[in-house]
Length: 228
Image 1 (cartoon, helix red, strand yellow):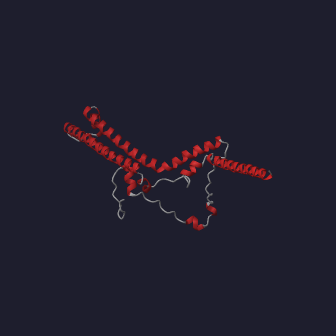
Image 2 (spheres, one colour):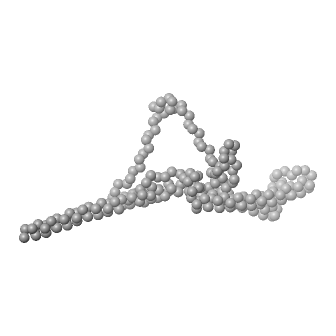
Image 3 (cartoon, one colour):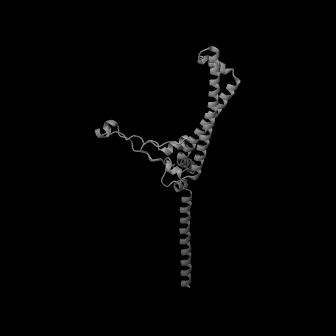
């Protein structure tokens, strides 16, 4: 009888121990799942990323395709703008020559502009040239924006997820994660003389690839620099 009671008690104790362990594991997992910064740390284990350099951007197929398409479009628009401007300049020369024949001398610029202002054909050509130039410039700006957006994409994704995590922490009554402040810079007067007089290294010049990406134009490498 006593042995049966002891066996029964042992089973009850075992069940209680298992229940306590399970509850502790559940609470631990639940707390981990409630960490508002868990997703941020999982996606950005090294913290906020810096700007994506040219080599990193070149490994993004979607970005490369977008930049190449934008560069080709810019070249086409620039050629169209140059052609439109050439046509306007050509007609401007014709009007200048006609005025010179009538006046027996080279017409002043003010008189030429007044004559062109009332010439409907020239105004049409000038408008077309201006619109073509604007289209080319808009595409150039779009190309540069695409480069900037890709350079900052990682940092912006981090900032968005960080803002979401901060909001969740506040809503849950948890402390908001604080960024580690950079070490203060010592005043110039307290620095050793050698540190004050040490010249700064010049900023690195943009590469041929970066200039080509930004402008959409083929850039010839400088002497001694290999094109990428």
